Length: 101
Length: 164
Image 1: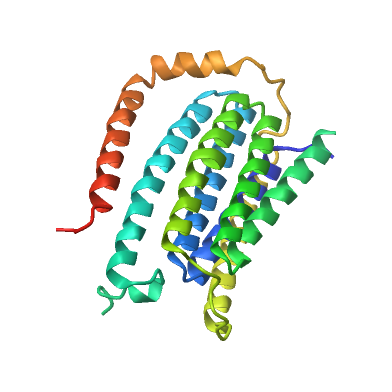
Image 2: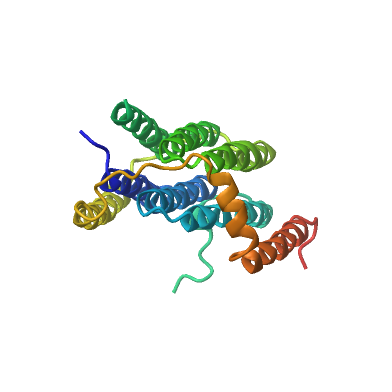
């Protein structure tokens, strides 16, 4: 069986859904953040697959930018988590309820 | 051979993803994420994106994961205490994720006829990426440096002793 574009898209969709599941289900802030990384990686896989199958190299340049942005995002996000830890004393999502109606 | 490698890498990647979601211990979650990312780099290799596979390993499995592990050790996160399993949250999360996956697969299947022919890729795509990066995407490339500077300043400010 030949591996086509749709195989890569379904694989990336599965990874993205896993990340989505984790973000809804888990309560540890750091694990939620890691699930976010999974979703970013799934999007990257889609970009690379399309870049391969349409012969446009632009998709790979986009992934390059995405990885850069993800690295910056991880630095700021982890600093935020450390700040939350210092203020709240724990890293649970349910301790962040100031905006809860 | 390509088909076998595809299933091997995909299976490993998804297994790592399950490990991230299912592990109680954050350190184990982070290590599962490393596994998942390495297998994803394998998929990039299959797609002829050699440069991105290297970047993926260096930046994600190297820098980002070291940052994650460093923070986990710094905050001294332990294994979560046993708590009653939250069936409600589990149910909601499963329904949302499965519905999303089904929608994505249906869209993917509509692509089936459009790009089925596998084109012969050129292996020298690093030159092409470099050319694009310094011609058409020069402005985003330069803006990225400002973004990194802002992220650095933000991270330093946020982790100062007293937040004002």
